Length: 152
Image 1 (cartoon, helix red, strand yellow):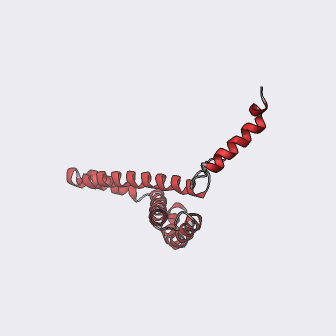
Image 2 (spheres, helix red, strand yellow):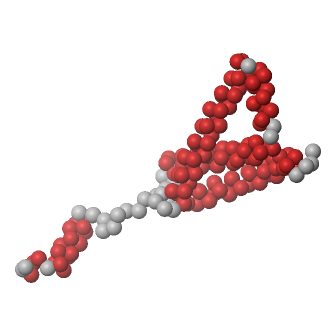
Image 3 (cartoon, one colour):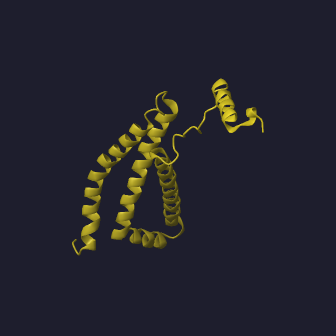
């Protein structure tokens, strides 16, 4: 093994190559990997799937009115269950998050400074989501929960 093949000289050569050709020494971090952006990406996909399945079921159960009005009335009767009211609250929460996060994604994609401020935009989305959901949940749960506890 010559002096030129020592690990030290190889690492110096590698560093020189990286400096000359602008090769990063570490892999560039992504916008999403393991951070808030990744979780907003996951939540956006999950809420999108939930909304899609709701719309599918909604179209199917609404189409029952043409086939069998009695079956339609039976399905609508099951929706008057208080537990379905909790499901409605979850659906509204998913829709509101999906809408606000969609606007954040548009800002990140089309605003020049969007990627730089993506974390702050996400916290803004979560803040708007809470501000929107708290009044809705107060109203919705005041309607849904009393029947569960024996109220009217």
